[in-house]
Image (cartoon, rainbow, N blue to C red; front, side):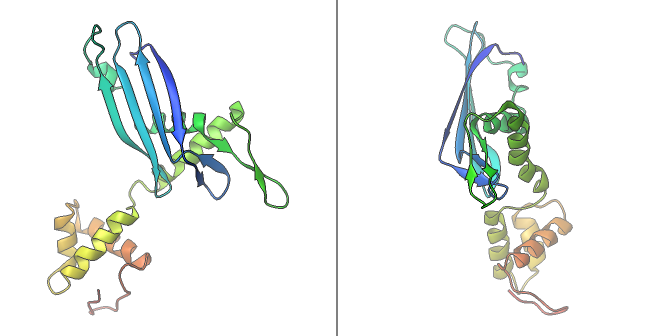
Amino acid sequence: MSWIAEAVFEGEGKTVLLGREVTVPSKASLTINGVRGEPDAVVRFEVRNGRAECTEIVVTARPRGRGIQTSDMEFFNIESLIRKVFSRLGTKIELDESGFGSSVWPPAEEDYWFIGETVTRPRIENRRGANDEELEEVARIYRSHIDDNPLRAVETILSYKSTRTAARRVQQARAKGLLPKTKKGQKKA
């Protein structure tokens, strides 16, 4: 890291991930206060569709500090930052025999890894998947072009790189119940 900085972690709301094993803030931020002339930064995160996402990065040069450099931007490894921020702010829930859970904050040091893995696992597993909003858009486009070539319309309008990706998204929309099941040679929307 090129910055010498002081970090402040903040979170709001609560979201439960991986069943009931981990609780993390639904929104979080990392404020980096540069020292010795390094820039300041604020990085914001949200949990969306069960996935921790980076939603904003703002880097600001200090009035009497140096300008922003490429090496400063290399610090923003998103997956690593997500793991660090939510590990700091999350808690691991310990379930008893009756299924009730309890947590202690801050988490034990050995729980940081578990929390970080739980938060980043959905990102890795769903990297090629689509979120609910995208699948709803796929279904809308597909239905509105049912008389033409709906698969081609989905591919073109959503700028997918291949017909296979468009077909996979249509299949995912069907699996979510956004489009009806079809029979070979029969169009349904």
